Length: 557
Ligand SMILES: Cc1cc2nc3c(=O)[nH]c(=O)nc-3n(C[C@H](O)[C@H](O)[C@H](O)COP(=O)(O)OP(=O)(O)OC[C@H]3O[C@@H](n4cnc5c(N)ncnc54)[C@H](O)[C@@H]3O)c2cc1C
Image 1: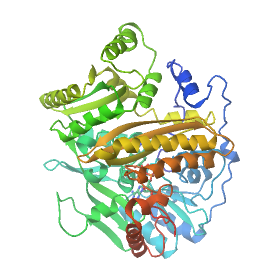
Image 2: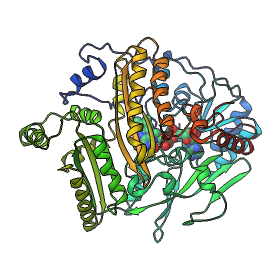
Image 3: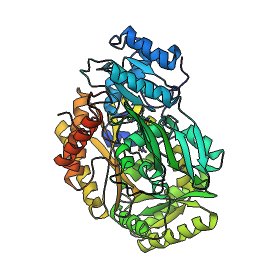
Image 4: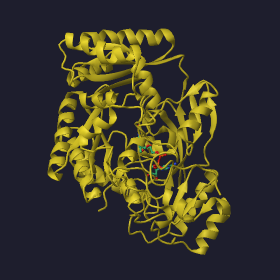
């Protein structure tokens, strides 16, 4: 068997790790108030027994199996039920609900683990020769439906897992360019780079279970993107295997050689070929890395401060501000405090805020990260402090920032906790110009609450702004509600209302989660019908036999 680790088949992360609230006394009352779910009495929704799942027999001929085995070796071709189930979906809420409810529409028929680019090329060649469907698989963490085979696919579907291509091959130290195999997962990539004093600085919340190739294929963004850039900026060169050969994008600093092929491949979700190697911009590990917390009286005031920080010379690594609802949630999920920390959080700080005339229900928590040489980080911080002061904000030091940094990779487990109790918790994100952010925020909240009302349920929505750019920023929404009798339909009502509000109010349909099949219905509204026609033309020309992850990015005609 191939030695590549995967997440649990029914949820996020690894077996034995989950969200719990034993040491968070405010959590249960918060959930009761927000969505009407009483955690003391909520009936457990059991995860089905794996053996009882309905998984159709694989559709694959002996001839194809033999041909594939001869390329990668028999031990790297898997047709067992667990391998096929793990490679069926990503980790969107729809994926998790379907898998927990035994709704597997179409699984891959075989899972193949190539060892190198030569083997990838041979498999892609076989796919065209035998008319197979090839779906590249990274960490399986996408939440846009980017992996699932078309439900009615009759051809053999091959999931090509890049997990064995997991090495940093070379670092050009003069240029800060690292050549890295595409299947490497976040922690291993950073470990290999850190061992030589470098970092890539890309830390999506899914960092622990996603891969470099997946990040590139979905146009990912990490929490320190203000300093290090999105994956589209970090990707300088790459190699992508196609049926007739390999596209090689050399890592030149900039080029004016026609439309950017690199940009065309970033975000292609496996539809143009299989990315085997990426040359990424890396940076020396910073001497100083610190996250400071600030409070603002309202979200609008906080956003104005973030906008001014983005336009200033401060250049922090993280600028993030939660709306008052997310601030309330953060307080509710804080661990129980005692002593001085309890006094500061529960007595001293509220007193100061009230004296400033703030309404405590409106306050917003912000995290700002500083990274670099010690004096550089100090200079950044004083520039930010001056802007915060001008907007009437309040600095509260590094304590909350340390906690945020520690628990950032634990939050994804919360979704499974809610699903285990019959409730949905999910996310939608967008980016919009600074001039539109307040409206986009208000419109998404209204859309969600209207959707909850139409379902006759109580729901929750909260948001933060992160990932600043010169012209605007990302707004990231988390929403939750208790399911009725039709979870998928109810989820679609809420999710669709939020997505529609984004495009109707000047935001993009996704800032960093890609398109897959879950977002593709809005593509024409996002990039215009002619834009979609152009993309369709590209995919048809590049893959006339529809062998490369068909059905993703552009809506099915
Ligand atoms: C809890 C949670 C938190 C998340 N947080 C973030 C976040 O902060 N930022 C962010 O950007 N995203 C986030 N995501 C979304 C997800 O992690 C990203 O979309 C990620 O980039 C997917 O990478 P992956 O390796 O898991 O790819 P997969 O899910 O395996 O694949 C995604 C798509 O890329 C294609 N693909 C994968 N590898 C290759 C390759 N080598 N060549 C060609 N195509 C390939 C696949 O065919 C598929 O279409 C989050 C997801 C979850 C569940």
